[in-house]
Length: 111
Length: 120
Image 1 (cartoon, rainbow over the protein chains, first blue to last red):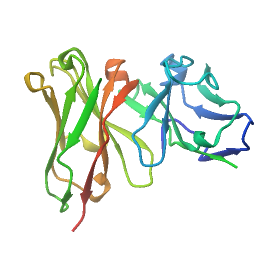
Image 2: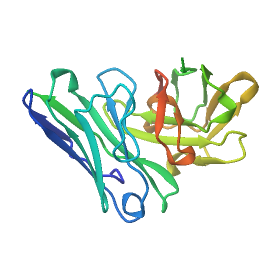
Image 3: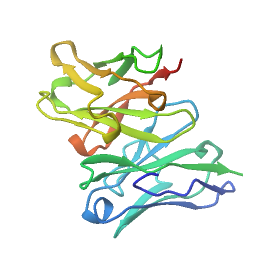
């Protein structure tokens, strides 16, 4: 059981908008630690997608956005494209565990 | 160009040992914390260990404490993970990654991963 909770799967049609939630607690997201998001395409290493809750590295399309509120964070993807099919992971830090923590991952299917 | 290249994975029996290596290039290795992150087959990502720039601080996930040791050689731009008393549940792809937030993560570069299979 992951410290950060994500839905196992989400889906959407091309062009639609989807959101992926990441729910934590008072010892991680709620304690003020930043949330970062990674995209993992099939058979490849993860790639940084969003950092510091809502910032995009250069080269990441503005279709991807992140937000954080209280003990949760969200990743939104607008204008879905087939190449967005991947696994998405949130990551933060947990002060009770003194550990980097990941969400369990969410598989995005573009219908 | 930043590159992280892992090596050393393979098949090992339960109770055995394995040493993973990660060769870094394209950045000043000694200026950065480094980490190992693993992914069991068909499962999610799990942080394993972090090490500070000079090796003076090391952190581990509870499940590997006392069995795994992270180390580095800044002269060789290399990161290591010594894994002892291996269990079936340690079977995973092990990634070397660079955490921009020190021991708090934000991994901006990842290696391609090396597969470690623990089985009899």
